[in-house]
Amino acid sequence: MHSDPVFRLAVRILKVHCYPRLFVDRCLAPLLVLWLRQKGLEVAAKVSFAGLPIISLTPGSHILIGEACRLISRSENTALGVNHPMILRTLRRGAEIRLEAGIRASGLTIGAAESVILGGRCVIGANVTIVDTDFHSLDPAMRSSREDAASAESRPVKIGPDVFIGAGAYILKGVTVEAEAVIGAGSVVTQNVANKTVVAGNPARYIGRVSAKKLERFTISNPEIGLPVS
Image 1 (cartoon, helix red, strand yellow):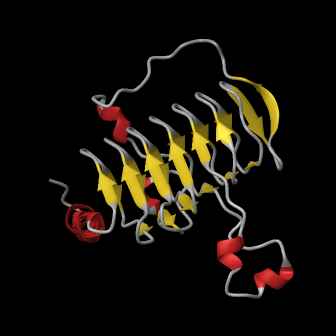
Image 2 (tube, one colour):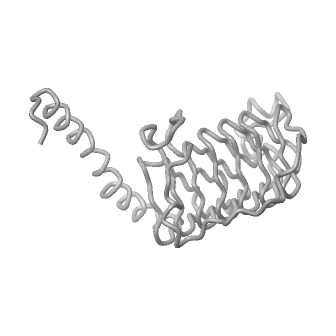
Image 3 (cartoon, helix red, strand yellow):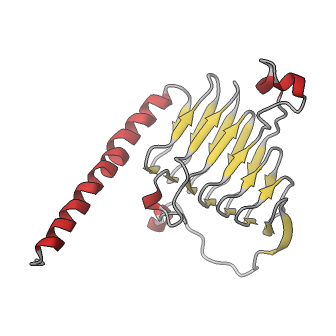
């Protein structure tokens, strides 16, 4: 054992610092899930949380978190850190958010008035925002009324499997991103993205194709599926 008393004290402090995180992840997160299941949240097996997400369900809406998803809401658990906890929020009755199996995401925000679906094994970089609504009316008179949110334009968003979305990107209403596409960091995506296409910029533009070289995909049984997201 190391004999330096300062070193031993530092180790003790670090260990104590870890206790609150373990309590949140092992105790509070499961309690949050149990409470939200009564409101329409569906959580599959082997889902893991780092920090507590913010999850809000409008009555009559539905959120699914698929098997072996890794959802990070704490900066210590991801290379780039997060600006805020993960936010999953349905905005209208009948709205749906669906995260398919094996998704890894950190500080992700999803707002759904209709439908936001993410395919299996997507990797979502830090602080990405995906929304299917404008939230507010384009009509200034309507924007000042109580009907503002209800009159906002919305269209479903669908992200295919094995998509990589870089940190800080925005995916806006009506967009479909097909399988294995790559969205560059900081991009604002307002148009559909084809299979294996790489896009970047504001607005996002085509910049290339994903290499045809095939790499062995992660599977749900692969323990590396739970690695932190950068």
